[in-house]
Length: 392
Ligand SMILES: Cc1cc2nc3c(=O)[nH]c(=O)nc-3n(C[C@H](O)[C@H](O)[C@H](O)COP(=O)(O)OP(=O)(O)OC[C@H]3O[C@@H](n4cnc5c(N)ncnc54)[C@H](O)[C@@H]3O)c2cc1C
Image 1 (cartoon, helix red, strand yellow):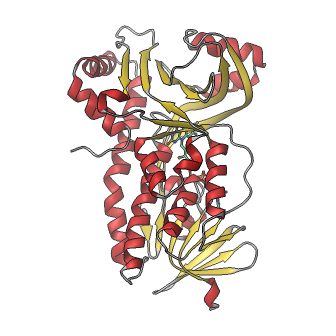
Image 2 (cartoon, protein in one colour):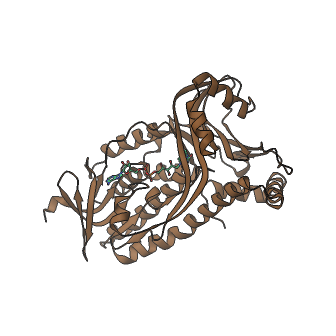
Image 3 (cartoon, protein in one colour):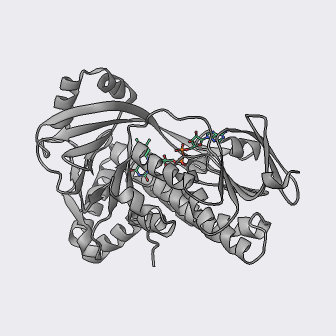
């Protein structure tokens, strides 16, 4: 084995979760390599990074490069736009109520990834391999990664951050538990004639949430959860007709809409890896869990995976230990289990409560929102949980 090919950790995948993990490890002095994977095309979506993620990116020393490109999220409004018998009251959550300036920030995915890639390239001690992982074999004290350019790398720990079709996960023989939903998230970006005042608005509809999330300037990103047939129809509209339709769905709360380039459609699914570790392997981000884009939880959960693994691996390395040792991996799995399953369950319940026509379920959702509107401590607890804090 060539000495130069041996790293304590190899991170596979240069999406936001993998980039953050590689930067965090390098910042803690752990000899790390990043296998970037294939070139990616443009991604017109945006990501709401909640308070917990901002703190993680600050700890990794990269938040300052991201902050200027993101829009603050100070308030979040939820409105019931269903035409059902039982309708919920409008609720507004204000970050100031829990002593925060913002709940987080919304940023275009390409800007986030660009800033993280820039930071990774500037990291001393982070080796970047611009190729893809083809396969891997774990031995007792190391793991060998075969790369698509014919090269090999060796590591004590592999962090699999290679997304929903993860090669690392497949090579480790880890299966996904999958739940499909009859819905698609249609995405677009609009300019509007009224300011958003740093407030995101979520309309609950019979097919799922319709959400407007602030971007810098008088712009917002839209995630509109609809049936597959409706998503196909929206994709086929010209800009003017689409702007008029989306503005009507938004009840003109932000005035006149104009479309910006880029629309997308993402089938909703919830998938969780049966295990998030295997010998010398830890999964991170969408390689470990895919959730519907409801409540801005997906990447926020992925960044908490990154922070958890960075901390455990760097602590083991600094103490002269092995970052891929079985006890490090079992601590990682135990530390992430509750957070991952809790978020998956909460998002699933919220989505199903919107889809259900059953009056008792509609009543429960309406009563829940009524309580959140009226009961301060409950509301503050939910806000803290929503941004990634643990329940006391
Ligand atoms: C419509 C929509 C809106 C969303 N909004 C939010 C939001 O507001 N907030 C939030 O927290 N989350 C949100 N999410 C979820 C979020 O987008 C994902 O959680 C996040 O992008 C996943 O990042 P990742 O780094 O885990 O995976 P990815 O971004 O998929 O990155 C995986 C990387 O691995 C690379 N790769 C693949 N195969 C290989 C290989 N063999 N070798 C090496 N590399 C490989 C790929 O090229 C890619 O770069 C949203 C999702 C959708 C669909």
